[in-house]
Length: 274
Image 1: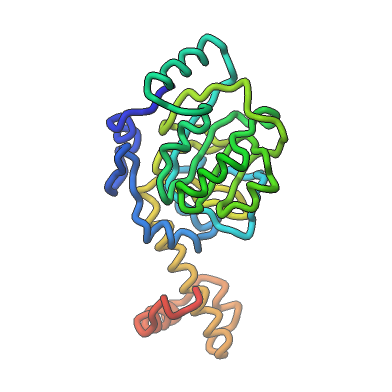
Image 2 (image 1 turned 180 degrees about the vertical axis):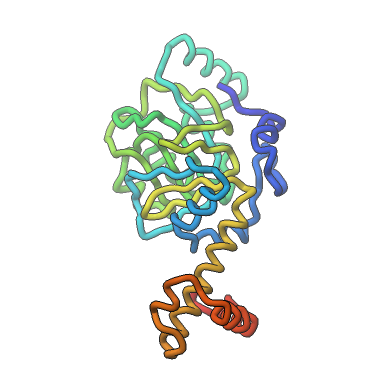
């Protein structure tokens, strides 16, 4: 099983503009991660589409907590169907590197606060249960309550749902994980129609999951904030009778844009409910 080297992770994420953690993963600032919680799926998707990153979204999930927004930095791992000779090699390498427990626990042991574990498990449901409540507790504890994206399933659903974290999975099943081998940690993974690299910003909403490359994270947040400010201003001016809904819903005139820019200089966005 390959745990990608720091040098390899840095090469894979060479466009990263931020510092890196001990493994070489990009460290998008906490401020950006926190502000990402107010970004909609459509806003993030739109920015990425504009940069020709057209396959960074995937939907059709079982979402344990659709009322929560999941954000954090991706830690990735990739599974393949069991082949005994290959699995034996992976187990030997794990023992040589003092890895303890099942292969799914190996990557969980690397998690840090603010991480989101992203698991490629080829959509396996029966015996594709990446976590139950014990490993779920470990994820919640190590990450500070972010969560898990698994292109597979989970077990112990009722107890996992009680944990202070969220889970996006393809299904639910009472079986234990079996007949799979983890081949790679912190490498590129395929999640449905999306490609994910370690350090990508995960945005999980009721609509699905968007994986934002670090170099676009600040832009996604800033454009979302600008959209919310313009929406606030437009509704305010409609309420005041200054503009009609038809004027606000179309492209703004030069006087309207000037009015908006002048107003924006007089307010603190933190004082507004946007």
